Length: 462
Image 1 (cartoon, rainbow, N blue to C red):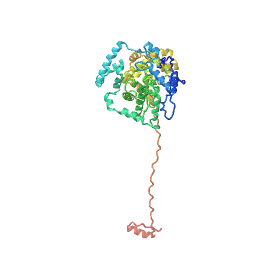
Image 2: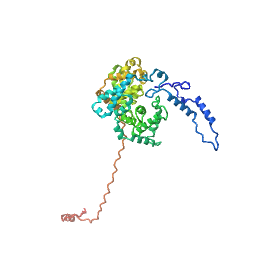
Image 3: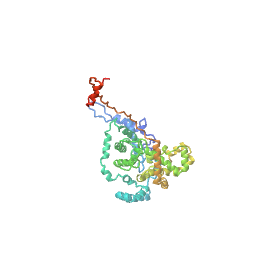
Image 4: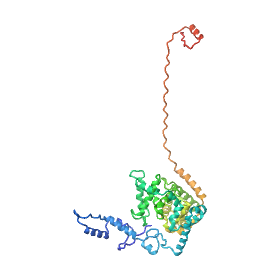
């Protein structure tokens, strides 16, 4: 959400552009520069060291940061423009304040979750359906981070077992030198920091605490899984986790998420993403045959519009309140929840799409920038629960999609190694037979000699 910047305290009109990018210095900066110049001591052999003054660009950047810090934010840290703040709503239209009834209900749920987390193993073994039900109702914000960690298996016993590992990985990343195998991944992470939740006060400040924590978590994961390293999209996942829990817990939750629910989503070919897109295509065909026929006729398959849905788990698509509720369910029920969200959107948007989105470019624009009214938590989550999906149904589509993917992406044959004929060692040459000169005898003498026996060669003179 792109919130407009409110007017500053000095009466200057705020605009959507970043003040730090303004080429001309502001009046405040010019005044500060003039005063500093007047007060500057003359350099000489006995002059005191002159404190380095900030450049105009640095001073403007600091003013811009102050203005951002003075802007209003909602309870999740997202900036709110003046108009919405005056109305008491955030950027997605959700109320900034909870009603007394909502506060009372939230407190009741907090107590239930605290009781569950004290005996987590017991509840997971004996009452998993109760946990699922409470996840669907929404986890209270005050304990969401702890609950997510439990749902992903990052329990106190887990963190105690692997205590110190996160710090080791962060330190290892600091030792990577230019030209090393991991250097490219770390460079991409640096470039992506400014693109991750720039509309929140936690990550907006370049080099601030929020960006440092995000940087450490992503670099630690790259060192933890060197084969995968880093892929764009991971920053949104790590950032969402960091807004709910400390960095070390966020790191281990990211590890569990990418190894369990999102296994294969970030490999070099985005294998699991393509398979899940094919499954969604099949589900649309089974649930909305008329909508499927229209999309299929235009060649509009989910791989064209749903990659962000799967890789970022709807973080870049839905309002924040909706996103959190989706993740509450995702960590317990798995990626089946992502299919439910997608179908919940189509339940609401079907009539609009069949009427007003008949062309491919219209469908693409709609599905990549879905209107907020289709994504609000109360509406979308209610539609999600109306969608009936069975494990058997998804398993059958998953098998079909996997077979088709393997057919479309056959493994590259390994280069054949030329078989060299074994070198044979030549047999040693036979020693020449020495023929001793023999004296020729007559036939009669030869007969007499053979009759007498013996092994002596007899040469007969014919």
